[in-house]
Structure formats: structure tokens, C-alpha cells
Image (cartoon, rainbow, N blue to C red; front, side):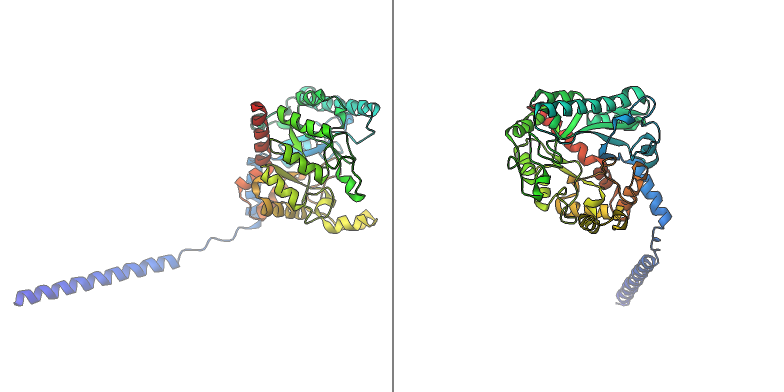
Length: 397
């Protein structure tokens, strides 16, 4: 019996020892956890350095930069730091990789004389862009036709040029010119600008409720089908709301708004209301928020609309611009939002007033908590996804 008691006592002592040991381990673990140092808050210098790294790694793409053909000559061109918002030195300084140069034509008379003048203007601009990439500075910039081209050229260290067509007016009544413009490198086209074209009503009709077609004309509907067939992105910046909604309904491919911000924040007719933004989302398209001063700052827009002096107007900033990006991302999702400037066509805000200040956009996105992957999609990934899809659908038609 004594041995049995001893064994019981020994067992109890062993269990007590094990309990104490385990308790000690738990305390040690708890103490260790409590003493783990909290990471120090990121300093301003560290944040800027992180943003710089992101900016250097992602492909930065601006879907709207207007041109003047006088700046595309042998002696006066974009290899020089001209008094333009976009040129090669400014793109290099600001880290802007891709510029969509715009074949823009102002709206004129809807007659043969007007169409002929518009066509001549468009060809002059197509030729200027090709001249820059193929004759003036082929070692510095190359024209891209696909997203694969964009990635290849950017990886080579050269800048990338792409061509957008603002206003289909130069097509005239010859629908074969749509394919001609595609062959010349045009990869998106809007059907109207400031004034009704032969294809579409313009948003300028909103002020007086004065429209020609109630949206798209019959030719406009044909143009949508032809652009789908060729692989040209349909740009819904500038047409009227009815035209935008009809274009989205008719298109077999995603559409883009190449340079429009959110009307809920700034009540400008050039901006997109929530219904339009939802339609672009549902179409799997992308809306490129644009850094145009009166499109992103309501106080400035309303002040100037009242006829006040521009010098006294509230200033539009990069922060105002990213407010629009934030709003659109929250409303329709990050996959459907992009970035544009409208440089050399009236665009520009404090902090991003030319291509040399492009980094400031990325910096503000980083401040707002966007990740590198999200910033890459905003800057170029979403737009290139749409281009891929448009070209894939064209190949199937």
C-alpha cells in the first residue's frame, strides 16, 4: 500500500510540475506578444520614396493630349522642351510612358465643303504623329496599335504614342474613311465634339435642349457597327447623354469615356452622371477621369460660369481630381476607372499642369491608400483591358 501511495504522490507532483511549466510557457508567450514592437509610422520621405518606386514600375498612360501640327516639324518638335504641356522632355521628367495624341477637328458645317476641310485637318494630324514617331524621334518614341505594343515599347525604354480621334466629323459621308483612320493608327473615336455632327448629337445641346437626332443619327448607328468590326474603341466623351446611352446599348464591345469626370461632384455637361457611369460599368468599359480645371472643382466651375475673372477663381488641384477618381471607383468599381489630362486642349490643374508633374498623381493615389496593383490598373491596366477586348471582338465579327 505504501508503494501505491508513493506512486500517487509522485503522479500528483508530476502533474503539478507540468501545469506550472505550461503556465510559465503561456506567460512567456503572452509577455513576448505584448512586447512585440509596433511598426513605426511611415515618414513623409518614406511615403514619397514608395510612391516613386510605384510610379517607375507601372505603365502610366494618358488618354487625351491634343496637338498642334506646327510642333511636329524638323526644326520645331517634341524632342524639344516646347511651351506645350506634353513633349518628350516633359514626359521623361514626369515619368509619363504613354500619350494618346489626338486627331481633333472642331465641328463645322454639315456639307461637302465642311467635310472636305475637316478631312484635310485630320490627315494633317495623323501625318504629324507618324512623322514624330517614324522620322523625327524613332529612337525616343514609337507608335503603338495594341496593348502588346504598349508593353513592348515601354519595356524598351522608349515613350509610347497612340492615336485617338476626337469627333468623327472628318469622315464626312464616306464610311470607308473609318477603316482608313483605323489603318492610320486610330484606336478610339468619338462621334461628336462641341456641336452636333452628322453622326451624333453633342452634349452642348443640353443648354437649350436643342438636338438634331435625339441621340445617334442613322449614320451614327452604322458607325458604331463599323467601329466594332474594325476594333476601334467607341469614345463617349462629348456626345449627348442620349447618344452615350444608345452607343452603349448598340455596341458589341466595351466603350470608353476618354476624358470625362463625375457630374455628381462637378455639375458640368462634359461630365458623366451616375446613370452614365453605371452603364459604362455594365458594358465592362472604362471612364477616364480628366484633370480639366472646371470639370473637377465645382466652386471654380460655378464661379467662372457666372462670368467672374479667372484670376480670382478657386484653384483646381490634384486633390480635387483624385476626389473624382475616388468617387468613380466607389460608385462603379476600380476596374472601370482610368486617368487622363486633356493637356494642350484646356486641361491642367495645380500639381498636374503638364506632363512633367505626372508623378504627383501617383503620389496622391498612394496617400489615399491605393495599392501598387490598383494604381497600375488606374493608370493603364483598365484601358488596355478594354482595348484588348475591343480587338478580340473585332476578330470574331
